[in-house]
Every structure is written in structure tokens, then in C-alpha cells.
Image 1 (cartoon, rainbow, N blue to C red):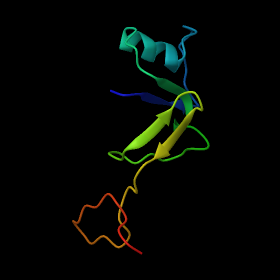
Image 2: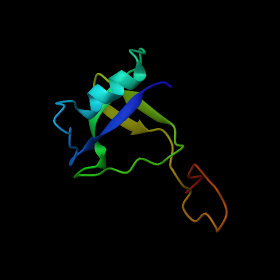
Image 3: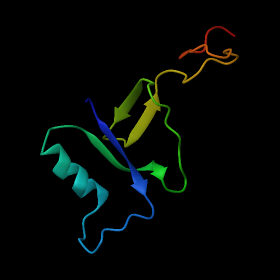
Image 4: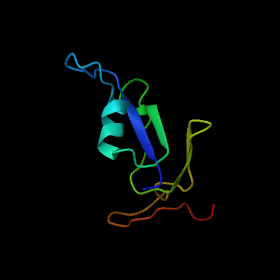
Length: 89
């Protein structure tokens, strides 16, 4: 695992514990040294940015950005055809 992008959880209820999703993640990671961007505008929140599964991304923790390094689908891909990059225009 190169990095973790933890989305916002707009309606998260801590059940009186005072713990945030980041606290729970840190506990689950058991102090593993992994870069984390927390409170990212994806997941159950507004605005909700959609991140495609399986695409290569660049995670810049210092700038708090996630950049797609490839197109998630090829424009015009037919039924059953999987494509991860847009080729030629």
C-alpha cells in the first residue's frame, strides 16, 4: 500500500466516543508508516468526487491532492471491452 485516501463521512456518528474516522484508520494501521490524505471530498459527503477503481493515481500528501494518471475508460469502448486509457484522437 503506497498511500491511503480517506473520504469524508458527512453523517459519521462517533457513538459518543469522540473518535473520528482518521482515528479509527490509524488504529487499524497500527502505526504503519503510510501517507494519508484524510477528509477527502469522496465517500459519503458533499461534494462527492468519484475516484475510479483500478486507475493509477499520484497522491501528494503535502499538497493534499490526488491526480489521475490515466483515463478510467476509453471513449467508445464496446460492450465487454475493457480499456483503461484513451488512445488517439
